[in-house]
Image 1 (cartoon, helix red, strand yellow):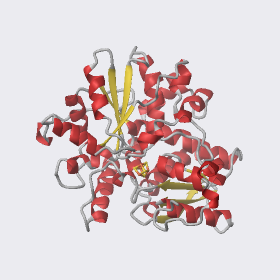
Image 2 (image 1 turned 45 degrees about the vertical axis):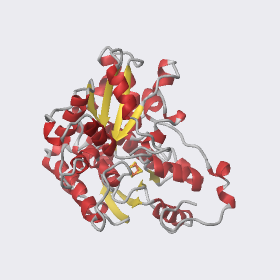
Image 3 (image 1 turned 90 degrees about the horizontal axis):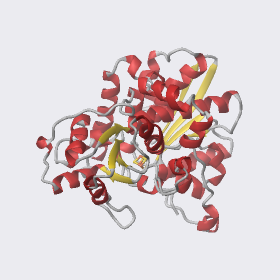
Length: 403
Ligand code: SF4
């Protein structure tokens, strides 16, 4: 499943597993668990978290952690940044989400004027990698150099993101540029291919559970895999940060931001503040929205952008969607994530109530947007328009938005 641009990296992960001096830590993104079964030829919409963890253990991972934990960390940082933009006017509004690397690269290339609006918070995989090589290493008495951190993701663009120098902070933290926050990315289909190369079938896998410290994610972290999920997760925490009280029940079933419509708008009432938000997938849609914002036709506080239709559940590293049934399969994957969120107690559906998140701020980061959090969990972006000569070019694809 690898290509020249997105090489399949499981052979390198296998080498690290075979190396007795390496500790292999795998972190799993939210959307993988609702599509892994399909990669083994089973039906869509199965939530197979425990089998996914069991498979990674069977393949030899030393630790299996949940990137949903870092999705909660992303929400803590990104919602705090949004509150600062609104209350202290520290940066322009609307704030755009930053967790989709394909969207970030599109904005850097075609709409660099929007760079100050993009949240400086790294993506969940970005935060997970930096935290594994610092906090997790310290707490487990390991060295950052021993650890090989692998992201299991639905997304081929993450292979590019983890190689961006400005997104790599643990090397700077340890004073050793050879240390990478995340060393390899393998996708859902690559994991299944790896298992099949070892003769492992789905029924051969013993279900298992995450390791602790960075293995607990809230319901808010779970829904990150869906379009609208980051928005809903952020609003649950923003309500708490602004008012000091838990969000009302409608924030736990925020229908206006859910579903497969490509551009959605909603208003959320938080205390005296009416927050205008938009949720978009597809870079062409994002480009049109930015142009409307630039012309003053639209005003928002917060905009979520994902590149893939329906969000990460249909990322480029997920099993192929059946011809003619694309939206049905997307919806089944989406439903599986929302069902999981709904099945959790209310206290486990918000990022700020995640016990491991409380612990990491107490023991390591201090508080959201602290000096250490800024150093490890935030980044900056680059104007890529001039180097590509974009301004001189006239034609842009109406579907994908790329020239
Ligand atoms: Fe990757 Fe697609 Fe998710 Fe963006 S929306 S992070 S490109 S899987």
